Image (cartoon, rainbow, N blue to C red; front, side, top):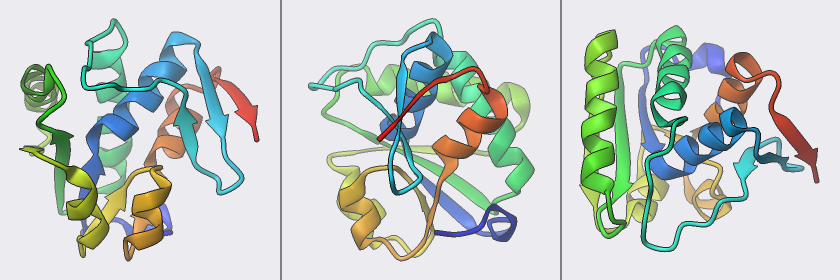
Length: 157
């Protein structure tokens, strides 16, 4: 795990749905699991479809504020192309980033997991399969929940 203070100037790649749904759940008052590994995870399960919720834009703004404070050299969101509404979410991410001046990229790919697991960039996810394989990772969902959603309903495992 990369310490947040060491993320500045480094490229960051995000497991988009993984991070976003956790922050959305925290904002909505849903259960956020505090894993023994220190990661924060939501209990939402995605079965091929994503639905924008009232918390989507606020979650992206909070994620963006924390990323902006970290100062990565580049920020690339990876979204699963087969998940319905990925294109719409991509447009929302660009809209939020554009208003704030964040130069984010969003890639729609068949399967982000191998891309993230093999990336030399700092990986942002709480997916244990990716965490076990990637070289460096940042616990961004935890950072965002702690800094931006302190009232989140955490359940420790």
